[in-house]
Length: 134
Length: 247
Image (cartoon, rainbow over all chains, first blue to last red; front, side):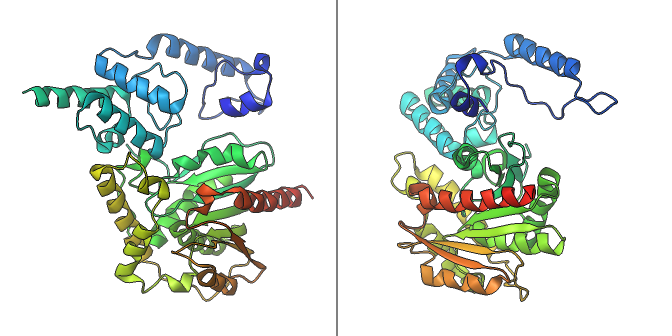
């Protein structure tokens, strides 16, 4: 959506916030309930500002950096799903390869596919590091 | 974690015609999310994700091509409603697209066109047996073949997935005697070692409407390497579909 807007619209018309709703709330008449949409957006903004969990460990920071490098955009939340953020399996392979090069740890595509979040991949790296040191 | 079999990444423009994309064996559909932008506002791009890929990594593989197609048809109805769908399937995705098209027609859903790329005619799939996996592996994704990212582990994952898709292709019980009521467009890469233009001509016998064989430069992955002729063909079909809806 952002890419399409960036191509079609001047920047002052581009939306700053994009949220996905399961369905558009409607009034009993069938018209869109704009007040309910506004409330849902406000909730989305609030959650993003406060609830998005930033990277805590250095492993999580590393993974976030590689997610961002492949996705070409900021990633705020360590619990965000790489594939929902726009990632696909070729980009995932590049993330894993970069993480292996940077850490020297045998992190695998399987780790990312099992749970495609920076938190989970970060935890896998921490565990690999601990067992490499032992 | 269980994912959907049919994905829509972008909100379609009003009146856009649904295009269902079915990727080759061993390939996840995520890389085609860019097609929504690439094909422009006439297309409502929907991607088919089989198990073992991306968000469907943990989902069990379907038991047969038929059950895979039924599952896709169910989800497609929910997303595309009664709008006639154009199907693009590449290689193994073309065979699955044919199976799906036959089932949609049996459900009285309208298929606008079946477009197959790098995909042998359906009568050439049964009986390929063990050779099929070797053929598919030989034709495998050039991005992976010369990629530094392809370590032993990735290779094992890819081969496992190719094997599962090849076994799925082996459950194909067609081709079906009744030709499809929609046009078929076969797009063949001149240098394709998996599906040569000759091996694609047989698609002609499976439509009661029009047939077109479109020859393009490139090998099995022409849709990734030199996608321009394919884009022109698809956007042409979709614009026709949109124009017909508006009449």
